[in-house]
Image 1 (cartoon, rainbow, N blue to C red):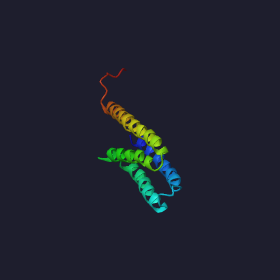
Image 2 (cartoon, rainbow, N blue to C red):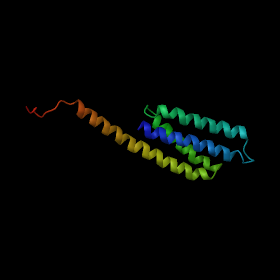
Image 3 (cartoon, rainbow, N blue to C red):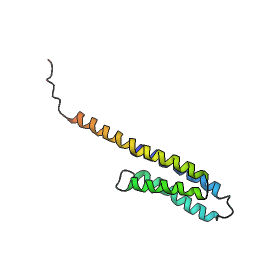
Image 4 (cartoon, one colour):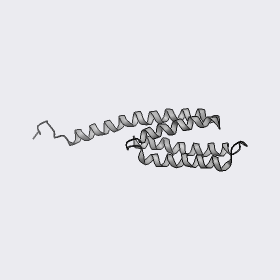
Length: 120
């Protein structure tokens, strides 16, 4: 799960940076505010890469997804990009957990003693 979720978060890191460049052009927004908010979100993306397997990591990721969609208020394209990344986040969590379960099953099978008699 960690690899899939981290890949999604790193993609979001770049999308947030590009969205900040677009938001800078809005005369109603202060450039310093845009970069402060975007910078915090970008740092959160990187930190979440390491926290995704810890308790609350996935929930924080969902919070980031909601914030990304909500940023569409300032950059309308982010409604679409936020929805895309929310779907990617869901897929990363869902399929990542399935992969982790399969790995655990295979590891348990490899450690279990063989029940078939050895042929001589």
